[in-house]
Length: 213
Image (cartoon, rainbow, N blue to C red; front, top):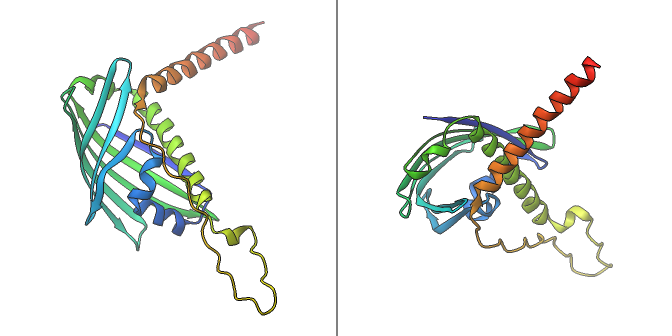
């Protein structure tokens, strides 16, 4: 099975990040293209991943199982899905860990996956690693923004109640409602990868010419 290894850092304590990762309904909107088709049941997940690649649009619908170990702050996700329209299937085994780094949290991911059918041609080569890296960065950015939106109002300094007034408890700032899931535009990601590769090649050529002069 192809394997993808990624990591990201979120500027929040590990306990807050860990709680967010365990609340799938809360965190699913942070992943581009992903959504739940119905609420989780006893660790079982029901969702879909929409992918758009030029004229091809796929919606992998399926089930998964989430397991989390509070003692070690590690977890696993086993899942599989199928796109009926393009007759493509995917399976994935994900292991993750949350490591405390000062006041921040580093999350490491390891993904073993298979992809068969029409979209299997896009599951090979270093380009998959590049796309995974960009998806991971998007997820981390969205997760940090959601945690910041849900930060307690007390974090910004609560007002001191007047003498004799009943204490006012800090309440969390309500997070904005997640937008409806949109298809992951894989074509745009591929274009961004190719564009960056061309830039790096041209930069190297110009550097060599400058040294030769």
